Image (cartoon, rainbow, N blue to C red; front, side, top):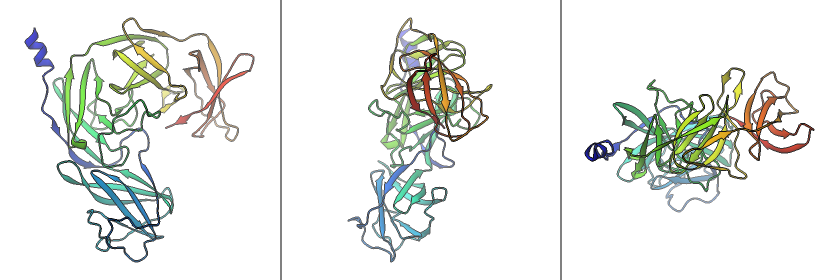
Length: 367
């Protein structure tokens, strides 16, 4: 029996990942915001005529530099500090206009080409998205599963794990796992999606797998763990509670079937799913103040309590979109939700008592 257990949990060799450029697959828009400065960086040896502002940002094991005039930019694509040998690229200072450049990215043991998407909300603010993912395949049980690391923070590193010091759970690098084997990554958070905040382990099916990113993303180690899963009963019909932890990343208590399996530990409550008529949408309601946690342990059962009235409203928009769901109030009360709003992206959420007193309000988000 001991021999069998050791075989099941035997460490696998690290898997080499290769660059892959394509559409950004991630739950929320990922970019690094960079503010321009007027002074030329010290490592730049030459400046093309017309450069009036500079953008610098962390990039792998070094720093990326881009110089810009009013309508053109020069990227130090090979990091040699010489911009006069770089081809100028035209750009437009408008958020909906994108420009791409290919930059050499120095990882720990090798250098790759990475495609960056640049946007300029204005001439002094640049937003950088790394479109190049590091991809490969991991063995899950008896089948191979596609895996892809996303440099969510656009700093040329693919190993920025989530930490509990970060309120926004998506502010870390992400990993995408093609769990259903359809050849695509579902662009939303589990349980319905395949976009995971980077963590040290993930629950896939009925097993826990350790996940270690090596050398900034050149390799990863994916190993089945001998970890016990706790069955949690959640009496929360029609909606899901999403949880995250530093160790296990995203998890969910799905009220649809009432049962979820998670490793024991402390999780943070992060969002609640919405419902639009009979179809689920990719949306969330996120509590970050105060941070609420849940201790997953044997015998845990969650039941929502007596309902209050909960209102989504926006005085500027009168839409026909009908939304209904169940969520928690600030003290754990069961809350029924029904809308007065339609197409705006940031409605305000209010909890009212039956006498009309406001208990709490919070801006929400649709993704």
